[in-house]
Length: 163
Image (cartoon, rainbow, N blue to C red; front, side):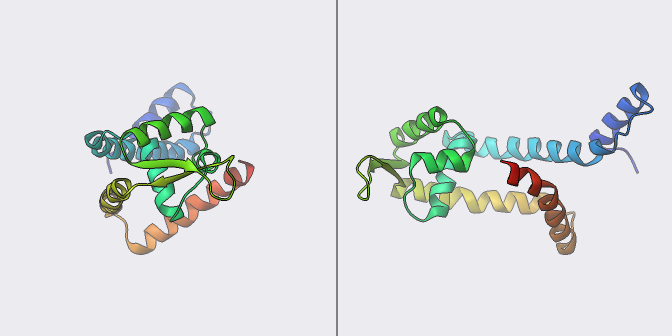
């Protein structure tokens, strides 16, 4: 079987460091490459909508929540800074995808909600994204997909708990 890009990179490193255990490249290198390639494809779709990936993530978080979220909740959900969240929210509001209003529960807080336009965008883009991701996983059987998901969750668990 021919080497893939990551296999070739591993072999190049093996020439430079013959005594080094390069096993992590087998998995982490492929995870990084898969993430980069899927992000690139996803970004191409979002570019047509004038959305960044992180703006899409804001819309996704609001849609999953089924209602409003506070900016601080979005900041935690997206692991970004408050300033970055504020900038994203301003742009999404300017484009008519979200609204920001004073919270009914606590007038010191702001509620962020999807507009009908924002909801229609996420309801159109998210299923199409899942179709693209499903197609990327076509080489795997259903059992292999399930097992890969379990193994990746096992690797991520300690990092998720630490964060």
